Length: 106
Image (cartoon, rainbow, N blue to C red; front, side):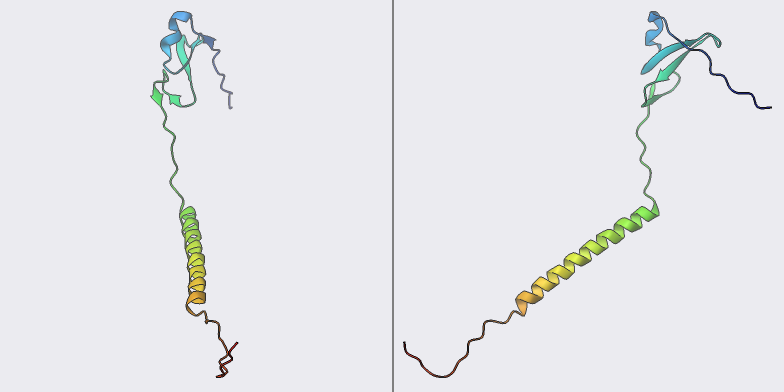
């Protein structure tokens, strides 16, 4: 049958042992007759001596595909907009004046 695990009772260390843990709080476990440390969130180890660097998870293939498609669509929209502006400027017809062939002095 399954027996629950009981966490040992921890008491704060004496003042002379306060520096036992390098980056955390020192505790004494009387049931085990040993010192224990509660590390700060970014540290680990028996005496909190190892700093844990934040881990970056690698990008998933779905994220890479999504970002690539987004950039492609953005560049396509910019290219279409530039083409429309260029086409309007190049093929813009100058104002046409009617030339009746008559000289109208004022």
